[in-house]
Length: 165
Image (cartoon, rainbow, N blue to C red; front, top):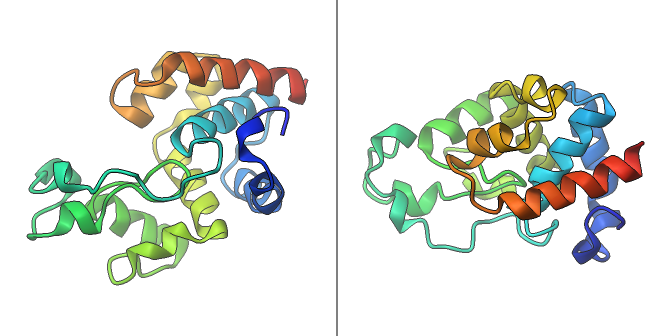
């Protein structure tokens, strides 16, 4: 609650699965955890959303996301706490987590899978190294493709650093 005050009761729901995901994916120092929780906090609206609010139509036909079949954009829109997006990412995440996400993409909306997918995404993008350096802008670019919400991400990071110190 000190890191993500808008989470409300959802913080309790996510506490154990988030801690387990951080342990599973090597997010195991205060710097890494602060960075991870800051990014999760922004991407999920402080644990309020495990599915992207937009329809996903903007991802239609995006070959860079593996969206090569009509309807893939909407079907494989952002889900999980770090918003795994696109057929290719769902396929890779599914293999890593042992879930058939191509057949059931909504599985990433379940609490444990939402947390584990965020941990998988973090590790698969080499974000521990950037977190170790304290480089929140580069972490944000790797997750978001730009610096959308950077000010909030940095504020959440600073709050997490205080809590985890």
